[in-house]
Image 1 (cartoon, rainbow, N blue to C red):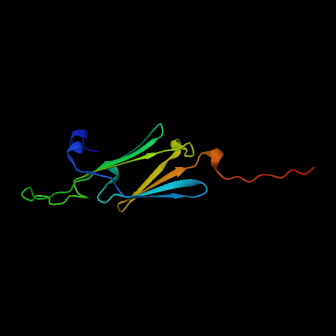
Image 2: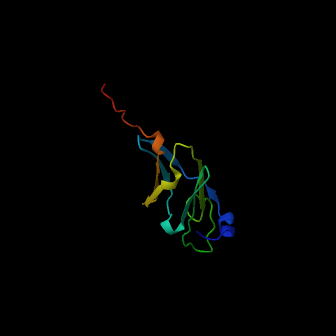
Length: 119
């Protein structure tokens, strides 16, 4: 990611996100056009998951932005993690501007089969 002073100067965008739940994990899907994996920073600190990225593309210096929603922006999104998430095993995949975060459920919260004992 570029320097924080640069990030502060860029327009801040809160990317759209979908949150899904399955038996074994939660998933967060985020729309982040123009983001490369080298520009992406994902961190988990205590109970907060933070996703940040700076994007930029070349444009003529004589051009003036009228609207700037996906190029030369600082994406940032924070999520509160519950105890249901195994924060040490979060995984991320970025493909074609779609970030997919895999948040496995904590072992004690996963569904399990109860064995029946015979007397």
